[in-house]
Image (spheres, rainbow, N blue to C red):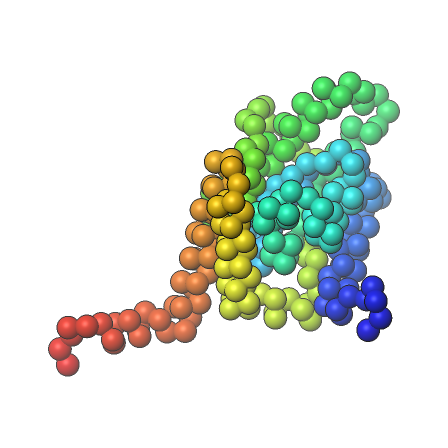
Length: 229
């Protein structure tokens, strides 16, 4: 392996990410090239974990999250890129069309409405009714969203291994420890503490599921103290 090379699984995931961002909508437009848009990340169980918006192209923003750690969400250990198995994007191509608003405040208002609409949508789909966003997404008027594009960025030959509960439990516990350390060392927002709670709930659910799969309930019943044979 030469300097600059990456492990084969990382290279395969990055390739799949590029393929997703290069996919097209019903009008033949490349979704990753949309200057304005909303995106959502999902974990290996299809659970929504993060929502964001961008004014610098969906491709640029999403790659920044997932490939080079140059976002607050990753740097603060709010989001572990390893957890992202699927991406859904809502490209706002209308904001680039002829006759689209030019005023930045008007554009930002539309983006805020779209992000809030997506946020409410994914909260309904979440078994925790929560995502990992540190910052609150301000409540505003909902809007009709453009068609979305959703796809996996984990190749099939890697998916089974990365989806294994024990691997995800270890990653999630490590993320929680790192996030807790950040909180202990800084003056942080209540939102970051809420994210810690959400991560802990996600870890508990996954650990419980794994325990039950391993026959945990039966083992507890058989070894309960004070039972008479």
